[in-house]
Image (cartoon, rainbow, N blue to C red; front, top):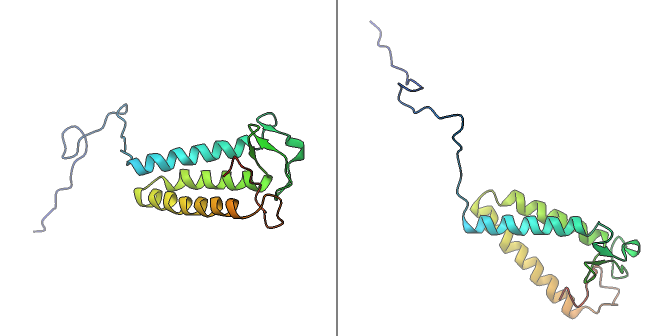
Length: 141
């Protein structure tokens, strides 16, 4: 005589509760995930705005890279096509890496290190120097 194993029953009379079709499951995000998500959204919006004439003044003078671009995001921040693409990619990375706390922490840490290095670069490299491949002005520093 073979023993039959009882399989768990699903539904209103079984072992597992039945979920209502209107019941939503929510996941709680940690503060570091929320901050990474916010940074991702902001950088994505800034990257998009850099390609919109009107939000970016002197749009017709925008260069691919370098400090010769006279395009100014909101009339304040000097931008180039490469600069905008970097903002877009950093924003997309923020949205993707905000999915877990560890990835969000690494995104914020390494992003902060890169921006610290760019800030130092902007302080020590002259704005008209050939070494200035990033369109940086005083507003960026």
